[in-house]
Length: 210
Ligand code: AP5
Image 1: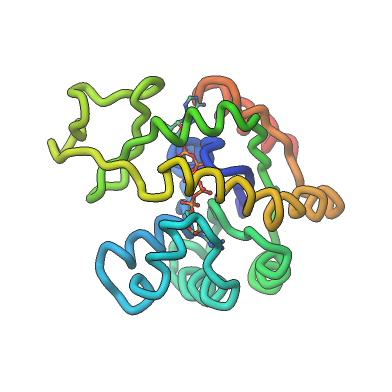
Image 2 (image 1 turned 90 degrees about the vertical axis):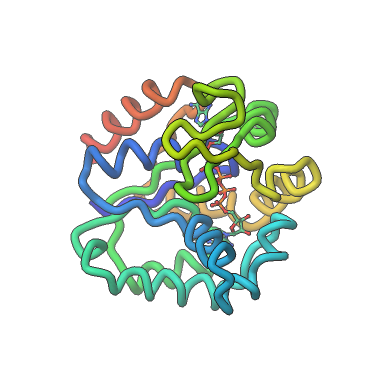
């Protein structure tokens, strides 16, 4: 299965991808996670993109496309994948068309009020990337990762100014992909306001028809 998870920041793409990758036995390729991994390891790419991510702007297409092309060379991506957060522009979508034939594009639909609540309450473990929410999915001990015992962090781009900028960037540059993929007959709209379990059930049901 070759899938794209599309939707505004905080809609739950990463949360559902964690379940879907197990269910479909395909890798979860998140461009946001790849950039954060490079930032953490202080690679050249990481240094180049650190300030862009913190502000909530988009990394230039040429850099992002090259990174995905590189990731597709790994054996685990040959049989299928979930692309989470890519493509985010029409230029990226056109580049992806040259790389793979998609089975479906899952569009996670969520209103702005819920988006802001989800992002501002998100916490994560820096070393494992595991995601929590202070209200909807809290760790067993406040502020501490269940597995590693490390303190949880808030992403720089989950602070208020960056959240607002990410929403504007999404509306201007990524939302046009909804009609782009609808026109190609690939789009599946999913109501992302339900619990993760219910959202994942809707995704499975919709993909079974594809
Ligand atoms: P990226 O990491 O992709 O961020 P994003 O798209 O903004 O998505 P998020 O990770 O914020 O949200 P999500 O939808 O995965 O939600 P989550 O499951 O975590 O990108 C970060 C940055 O990298 C970009 O801003 C850009 O700078 C750069 N970048 C990445 N890709 C790029 C590209 N292609 N081109 C250029 N630049 C790029 O859930 C959010 C919270 O809600 C969590 O706390 C979770 O516990 C909670 N939650 C999830 N689902 C539910 C639910 N159903 N009910 C209640 N709570 C829920």
